[in-house]
Length: 288
Image (cartoon, rainbow, N blue to C red; front, side, top):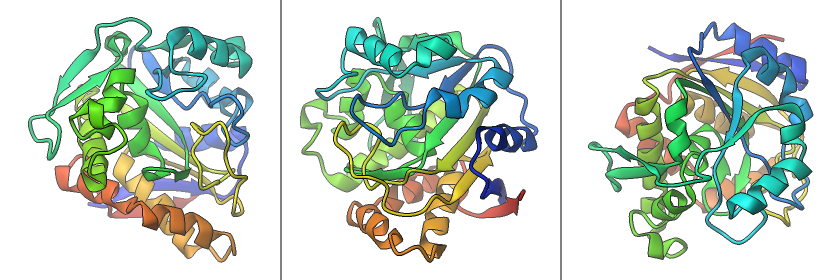
């Protein structure tokens, strides 16, 4: 059965909320709102104001984890300063999931590359999650979307190095590339399993640079905005975004596709689908 992916070309905060409600997905209990808080200096990340209507409606807590590279978010102290600078704490309760250890260790018995995933221990406080993803390029993964948020995004600082290194954190930047992508899929599967399917996903195709929001120095967006997508399937929503880029007639799309293809970005989706926690087959339901 094809997964449902809702889509709108209208890029407004109110439309984000409308698409979330279209899912009809009740998120129980204490809700984590996973998003990207943005590296200091990055001009493309989606701001608190953009996400405010849906976060206010859900009533959850913005959740982030520290990074594994030098920058403005690699320690709890620096990350908290960035959360203030980017006004997240001005609007929402915020939880740095790995502000204090030890990490929450998730088992991945069916993982192709890694059999463990290390996420922030505060994840245990939450019963469900809304994943708000800014779809764009990425220097290593090719693209960033829902699967990256579930994997690298939810991983602790150590967990990020573990995934990047395909189980060998000391090889954070030197591991076999496809094994890194497969490790992201493995890690994402463990988070889906942990929340027992109590997750909803929104991808926003706006400010699409070849670079991630984790880049302090990032290229400006290279193609026109496309729209907002919502689904209960992280694989389907990322596949739909990729397909929309390929279908675009915008002259800048080739630059983004070069980034995605040169990093074999689609392999993360392939590996995730092989693990069976979602489907690449979807029905795109337009709400405009």
